[in-house]
Image 1 (cartoon, rainbow, N blue to C red):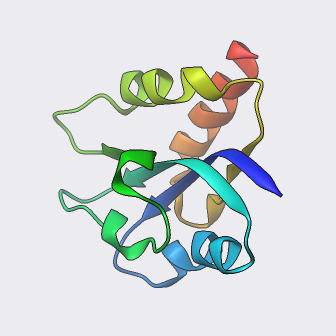
Image 2 (cartoon, one colour; image 1 turned 120 degrees about the horizontal axis):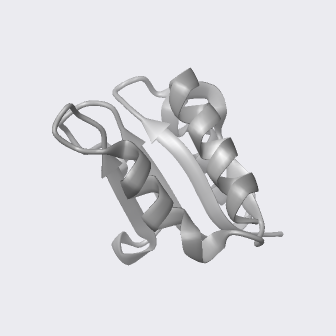
Image 3 (cartoon, one colour; image 1 turned 180 degrees about the vertical axis):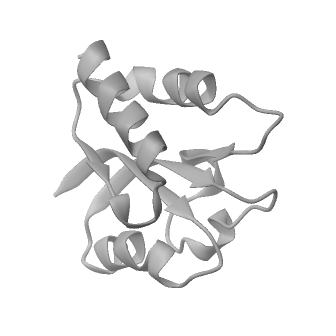
Length: 105
């Protein structure tokens, strides 16, 4: 079992990391993780078992453009095995993510 890219949104709620940590505990290999943080604070330290160089973090705030950051991060993984934990991704961002993945495929 191997996932090329795992996309999730993290925040202070434990359920935001439950999915990826369960995959890791089940010995699923995850090469890259795109972490979306909706606060001006990084929660990527809550992911256990993924090295820092395999984490791409997008911090969403008013001063940064989520769309361009995400497009840049996902481009290398289009057409590969991508998994998305939608439980904590905001609905408009989820639709943009889905649109970019299908558009770039």
